[in-house]
Image 1 (tube, rainbow, N blue to C red):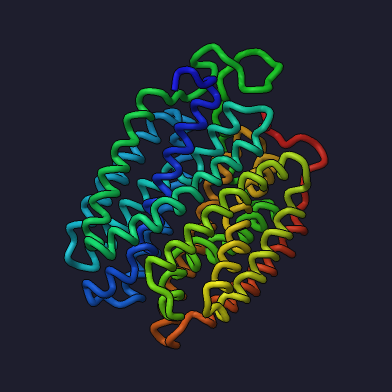
Image 2 (cartoon, rainbow, N blue to C red):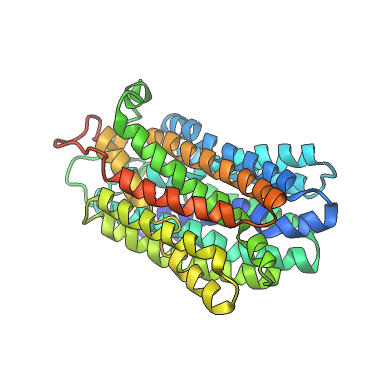
Length: 408
């Protein structure tokens, strides 16, 4: 690890943390059917616990942006890993829905949320002047890798040994991540006498977010457009597909492990698509990229209710996977453009909170729709339409003609 250049060493550690935190949010979708069969709890009730986790996952972002500005990303990342690990281990022992909602929803969601949204943004803006979009793409791909690894793994353990055993295995594994964070992560390049990669200025520590930045941000229509489109992103990705794809595939005759494997295929293509999105964000207008991503996603979701065979589910996994979270790099780029790079972590933290509120609403609503209507068709068709609408809305965001205040 010491042979890797310091900036890229921090990228490696951050990517590892993001893989694990993504795994914590993959667990509800991976284990939903197994938990339902074992406990007798309804799909809607379990989806409510998952929805709480998604809300806390999002609300952790705004607090994390402020905390990392004050105490540094290393300490907050270590805190996040410990909370997540302990909460998941506790969730493996619960025997009631209310306890599941507290430890697996609220506490584990908050623990993961302390790093999930803001850590990558803070690291990219502190350590990189050049290749920032590419780095953000790598971090987005790391989230994809978390799904790629943990969806099939947790599903397999859940089916073979039980959902409690799957949570124990994940809790122990996630706790081990605190070791490389403590040993190799650094808060700022100035701590070791370096400048951000590509910087031509003097060595100096990153400035904390400006006081009152959110008070000014909420007065701008652009903030609400960014937050609104990202609300739709959460609803149509993590909330709907992330939580209910395996259950939907099971309704259409696929075995759970087979469906989880297709979700892993989705993760592979999302890995490629998100890194590609970071590369494109360094070169093209992020608003046009968002139009393409949301439109592509909407068409994919309109196609999903008609999936009944291996060929069609494979086509969906590839198409949807290519832009599952490809929206992240251009969304962060817009936050930095409009509100300054020093404020990007805090602003994006609140934008990500909107993302997770959308995810939570869709997670619960889709479960309720399945319980009430017998399938997910209405949920997927409506999601496809609002995704297309979000792409159109993204093109109306007005970018500044001069450098944003606080960009240094």
